[in-house]
Length: 271
Image (tube, rainbow, N blue to C red; front, side):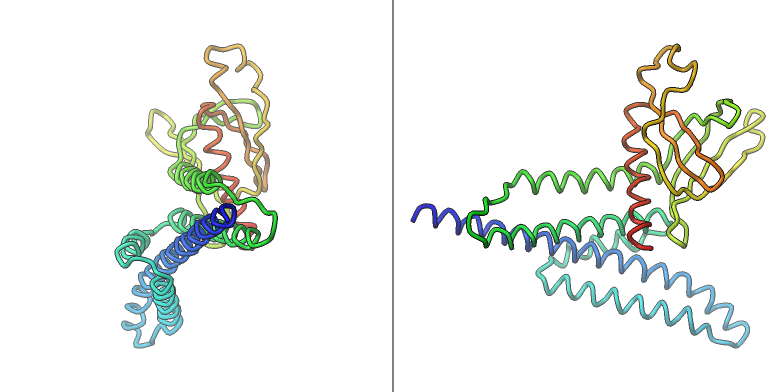
């Protein structure tokens, strides 16, 4: 009897976890839908204004904006039907509609995709627990999943904002670059590199599409003999032209590599 009561208690706990995971995923998807709807509406406004000047309606822009708004409203209704608090949905939607860049949309989409994965995992766990002899999953695993989601979001925000990296040229010359990573309209991962020359008189910018990342780059020749060598780390990105190597702080290497890799994973899953 005691074991049966314990099993029932664990089953109820798992059902609550599954429901919370599904609820969180629904709210996240509603946020992404609201962001897309807001972006579609803002893009439709210039087209409608130009069409008004030319006396020809911009049907495509208006249709896309209307469709996106309809999807967003249904996603919000589904989240409310599943039991999401109105204030919770309002907070997520208000935050999502402020997204304007590709990096913002990518972060929201990646977060929602992670929530969906967690929801699926929670559902599988609940199903497995119905079978005989299956040990209940611990709360520690749920905590690990939440930590994983937070780490992914932090890494995406980090690479989107970018930072200063030391870049090595084909000839071995070293130059400091302001580097960031975002996605374009085709969901390709794009590296943006910016450097200042002649005392900041002019700025040189370059963009390239990233198709891969390497984390096992060896220490550059000569850098291992200098001070602070143990605090440096290296990684590289693969582009259509060549492999570009970077030097970064060892403490930040994981953020760079995980953020870029997750962007590439999202690109693969969407293609």
